[in-house]
Image (cartoon, rainbow, N blue to C red; front, side, top):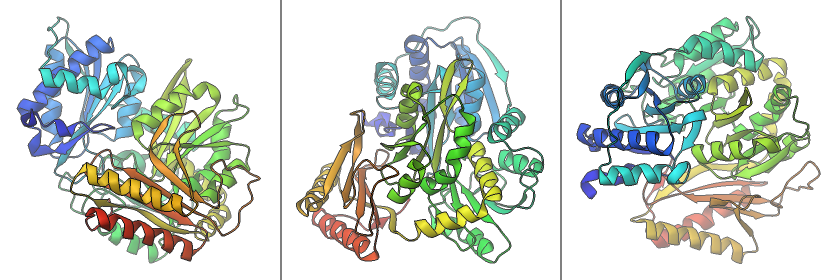
Length: 504
């Protein structure tokens, strides 16, 4: 079955080099998804869109034809769309399933799909009826096709203006609210530029846009703000002075890095310290709100958030899994989540329905509003973050998954032998598909947790999107502790044929 490119089915979505998803295979996949939507989800309507990638147009064109011919009502956005505008469009049609053709921050030659069920519920490996993406894969393997039904039709939709208006309203940002701010925004030739520049212009901010026009050739480099060479010119512009901060977005606009004028990146957990009270104001009916942070979040940030009366809980990585968990626990007061990969999540309540979603425009506006209202708080947060010592996430490729898994186990064993504690499950018992290792720190941190400089944490995980890849991140109270942890990891993984360091 290797000719079917089964490796494109990842834990969170579909990703593959575009040449490996021929139009014959993408047709087979579309029929499998149509079968899944109709028979597993009961959906008769589908939202289809694409990001800026050169390969996206052909898949969108094909998808429109297939779903309409099968009897679906197709709501198509032929223009380039961000992932968050896609989710917003699906919210406007809560009875529709949805597919976005794109590959986020992957290199320009890749393609993929984000898939949602009605109600913007995530479909991924283990998320969704029948196992979600597992069921789609089984249907794809057997070549399943639903019977064509009458009544298929196509409607073109474009909710950009509504998305901008509603995001601004939710963030409490109106005309001239952000007047006086001078911001660098780099879109890396991806899909988010139009909505961001439109909203920030209405709000009165002075934005210096970089790589604004969508271009699937990605002339600046990989559309990933973690890749230094892609953002280096914009960082240099930021450092030359006159700007309050910079914002850097990935190819489909669901990722936002915040960078100070001196080039220091503010991690999402520390940004959440400033955003937390403003999020609370959006959910006044929740007396004790809860937030999720991923296992790489800085303990000092967790403590500062908890001191504001929030419950702060560790969550596993993975867009779909995070949104599924937010949806499941919304009634318990979980309102938002952040990943240290610079993804932000929100539960939006409309008409008694909870939509777990990503809205980077909302979080960008809320961040800018918080920075304008409390610039001294952001200076303090940057200083607090940089009073600790972090080795931002890096990885190593291994010849195969077995060697990768053996390396992860050996690293965990090495730290545990030294007296560290290991956490592999979330508070609700769910598997994190990763390991959080801590020394000098409890796993539950609240506003009263005593903390000295003598602590270290290591987050390690197997990549769910790339074969043979493992990732680590280290944060510590001292440089010596950070360096010792990094050294132990590097020395250990060399025994398992680890490749050179990989960042991305």
